[in-house]
Amino acid sequence: MEMPAVPTIRISTRNGLTIAADIMGPEEAPTVVLGHGGGQTRHSWSRAGVELADAGYRVINYDLLGHGESDWDPQGRYDLAGRAADLRSVVAAGNSPFALVGASLGGATSLKAATEGLDPAALVLVDIVPLVSIDGVARIRAFMTSRPEGFVDLEEAADAIAAYNPGRPRPDDLSGLAKNLRKDPDGRWRWHWDPRILDGAEGQPRFLLSVMDEADWTDRIPTMLVRGLKSDIVTDEGVADLRRRIPALEVTNITGAGHMVAGDRNDQFNAAVLEFLSRTMPV
Image 1 (cartoon, rainbow, N blue to C red):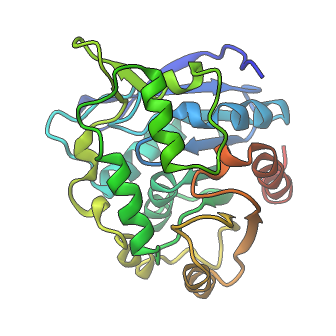
Image 2: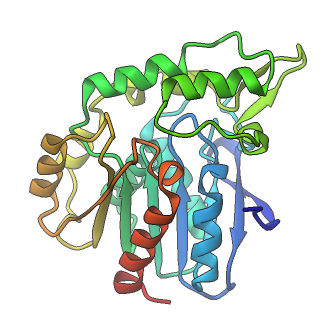
């Protein structure tokens, strides 16, 4: 399925840095902000963004700072409080009411922003909970740091991803993969994110526990967790802990999906998010 061309804007945020975002859908409609996971880019949401826009929502799909076409912080400052400030800048480019849909690091950013006073009409967490599996996080971190020298070509990068995630078919068309890598002057392909994002608190497996201990919104903001049943990050224990923190939490389990839920089972993921938003923030 070829994705339609959409306009890309730049949003000013802290310290003079800017964020790249695709924007689509009716101009005056309620806004859905899509925040991808660590080590990804906004292109991981391409199909979800189109379906949300087709359903009548205004969609802002942005590259987190240090990822994709957004700026990289010269000092490598990627703390979660700063990411929450970035998210407030992104939200300001849309309309009210607004909903936040965040995968992994994007979801962690949404939780931090809500705890600091951002007030979405709805919140969708995609395979992220405060009590994550430490072993699962270690596996992801090992993959993210395993090829600092990059790849000779896209074929080599596709082989590395297939070895890491054998449950997902290796694509024949690598044009989508090219959007998540950059070709450096030395001719090698490297992931399109700043390696320094793994430094500091965000690199610790359970950095969200302290954030959620301060949350005062958990009985007010409708929240759904979309969990990949093959995820090595979100366990039954992690789901139970989040239910304790958010008593009205809705949980949608996506069969056959791992941590990259939207990429593994896009149709099921999109249907679940649209159904939730139709009830909590209708067009």
